[in-house]
Length: 292
Length: 158
Image (cartoon, rainbow over all chains, first blue to last red; front, side, top):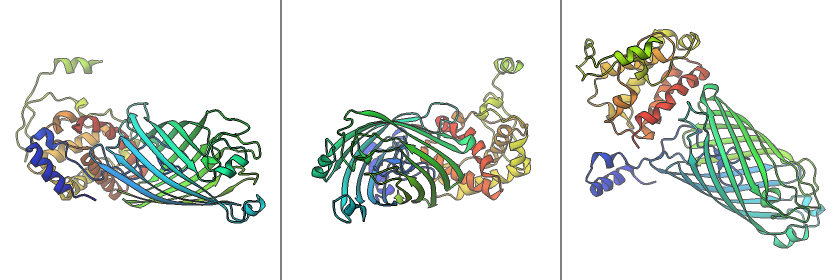
């Protein structure tokens, strides 16, 4: 955390405190509660499952902000743990990193991998807000729109190839549109993602059944219940590239709570569909996010 | 359809000086200076407990702003009697309370303040606290904020 005072003093020394330049004073924080979204499993700011057009961090157009998150998703037969961080620059550009570890628990033995076998993945993402503002543009239908790239790398190349996956790494490209309908306390998001990822990339990219980039959809609707509490639902479609096990779309029902300005707690019920021949992977989604 | 005609005919007038306020430079008075169209019906006016509720909300809002380390300095040297009065008029006008707004446009009223998004959001937070203290329902708060949110474009100097 840098001191605003030092920055101001430095800025004043540099720009001899001309009134116009004084207006471009750097500010820490300042974003309205919950309007920075929560961390997705992929790393970028969003609703948990879906990526939104909002930029991570509590900064406004005059500052730099960021967030760190830890997420735990216990499912029927598997468990996902994830950590990540994101930096937001001037509410315009977001850089995110995430590391996910997928524990196969007892299912690992049944799959011939060994009990507790883990698939790991690293994600690096960049997102740019193109136009619109989800909060301020209440007199326009135009949503906040952002484009982003995500580079993902899985670590179990040999197994990925053995089950029909083509690559251990891949790039997703997406366009996200987010709109807060304040009149109705409703936040809506729609995202189109071009991807070849199998199970979010944990099982690699492309496969023996299908190999091309396909557009996938992500949608979210959240209702603001109070200043610091939102309830919502999300859906995220996934490709179905691997012959050995069908892949299905995913859904969640979430509750996001900001008990303090720098903390968001997200709890959700998730349904990730079948994973690696194990049916109906439903479970919980628990995520803590600290932001500045 | 007389309103636009009257607006065209309006000449720059020196507004009446209210008791306790300092004289201002001349400007054209027009309800549209409020920066938002009023809600139809009385539902929101009732949700804000009428003029008494709006008066309490504005007084709490102004008191909080003055004490707020983030934005308190912005109000130093401002005619706070006038600020309270014009805010009460503006809120009453937008919430469908039937008042006239006699203040300046949002752009003119804020043009020399050098406001940033963080200042605007700090005021929104203080207004939310004032509306909570008045027990205005969260849905009604957001309806009102949907009218005010768009003013960010007029008052924040980029």
